[in-house]
Length: 115
Length: 113
Image (cartoon, rainbow over all chains, first blue to last red):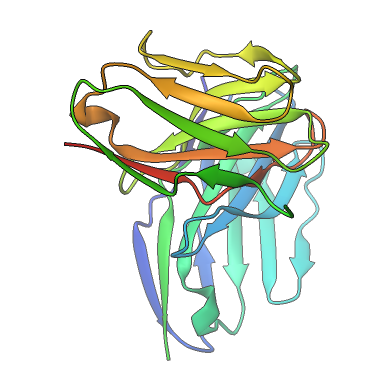
């Protein structure tokens, strides 16, 4: 069975601060995919990134960066110079390969960026 | 439309009633997914369609829940004899193929009173 843990329930930061959202996953499969989604107050889940288990390169996209470490089963997400528009609930998720389409989501981290 | 469309956006029903929730995926997307999100939780997988067939319905909680996608496009999630515990946001997502990123709709908030 798969499990995703997001230990931080809520985080508040002041605008322009950097913030890291933690994600720890569990799976026995060797091939899997990790995701981050953003859910703004409107409710729609917005896809941010997908990484497969064979690609441990860190990725940067603008103010967003992701740190994937298989040794600690973590896939952390950092927002640099946070903005009010970053306020949302962020979900980390996991899907195993082999034809299974079930994505397992964490419980989410609510980020509030205070102006 | 440009994105995944779900109707209605809100539905209030009485305990014991039957409800249908509709999902219009992005045109041309063969894969369609239903998830349920309870307050303060992450989405939970319900069912996955590839074309017209339900390829994985292992997430449906019980036999009161059923979903169809007769023509491989629009899907309907059907809940019989609704219970208060069914209250949640029901999310639909679609993707071009099975192994690409899914795009989510804004969900239907179901409240059973």
